[in-house]
Amino acid sequence: MSFSISDHKNSKRVRVIKLQEGDLDKLIFPFKKHSITSLEYKPFSRFSLAQSLDEVFENKLSKELVKILNSRETGTAIVEPVINNKKFDKDFLVKLSTGLAYLVGNPNFDSMTDKYYARFYVKHQDESDSYLRKAYTNLDLHTDGTYVNEKTDWLIMTKMEEQNVSDGESVILHLDDWEHLEEMSNDPIGQENFKWGSPKSKNIDYKVEHPVFTKDNKGKPIISYIDQFPEPKNMKQGLYLQKLSDCLEESKNKVEFPLPVGSTIISNNYFWLHGRKAFKEHTGLSRELLRIRGTFFSN
Image (tube, rainbow, N blue to C red):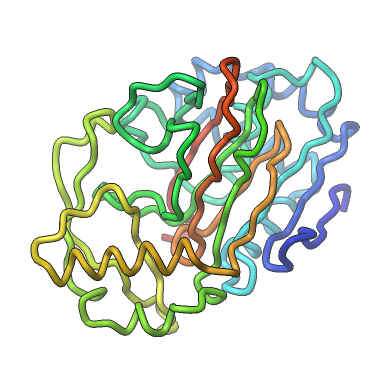
């Protein structure tokens, strides 16, 4: 195949897929057929885009991504395109991320931006109502989709660009590597329904209820959790969430790494948690990210 797959240097569970410039060149023409506006307004155009991407890689890229994401042994892929040329601009990265998403499933509607994806900045100054854009605070380990009715099987994050950035590394943790998994997933409180809300910026006008821990079809624990959004109804739920947060953040098995600009991380949202370390303060700090989350086609 024309792309390479290797283990990430910090974890054998994370697979790194490198896309070479020569193959990316072959995408410039078919990608130009689709404007960003047409991708936003015409969902079927995204499937055409994804097919063009897969055909460049002999229809093997989709198979490898699906295999990696569905395997409990792995579950995360980092796609690193070799983009040293200005011809691969931000629009190209949006299209590449869209193609990757539609090789594995259907994206959910993102209420934060009213699109199938969200683009947002982390900057020096911030007045938002969630930790997502707080540059100088750790974004603690969490999963996505905790506060919506839709299923969220997978998550894509693409680093579009960054300026004046030090630190701010990605942090991920596989459930099976977490030292406290058995204790916390078997605790009856973790299997109770919790109420989950969201801040105004998420544009969700309802709340949902679900446990922190459930099990997959093989009986293994899966998690749906973020520290900012649960609304504990009593002391035992509140103390359980505090202990859960402490145990996650104190884990010695977190995987930390810088995500190269232009790269995309795709993770199974049920057994991988993700977060970000705080940045070093700089008045000119800026990082732009793109997010897509959704369900597998098989579901």
